[in-house]
Image 1 (cartoon, one colour):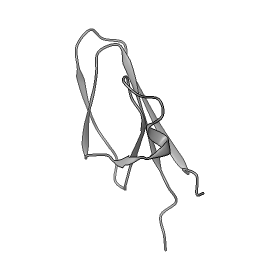
Image 2 (spheres, rainbow, N blue to C red):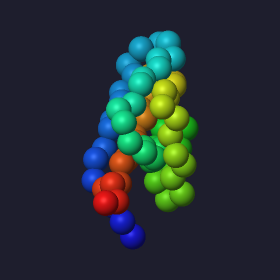
Image 3 (cartoon, one colour):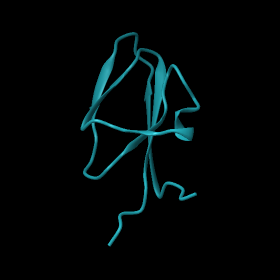
Image 4 (cartoon, rainbow, N blue to C red):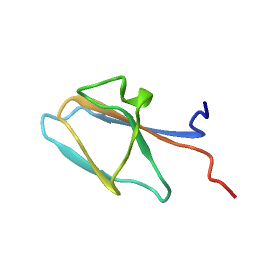
Amino acid sequence: MQLWKTLCIVYNGSEKQKEVKLSEGTWEVLADGEDSFLWKHPQIAAKRMKVSPVSILILGKREESR
């Protein structure tokens, strides 16, 4: 199993939903405010991701193939 080379951890301490724009590359959703086991079957993240109020979003990027 190939692990993720880069992680992006977004913490939203606000009472309001926030949106973040991701850097270039293919990011996979590993965990969010609803489910911490998304990493078992990760889904490709959108270019902009919404982060629920008072929650966390964890994304992973695998090493790019050459």
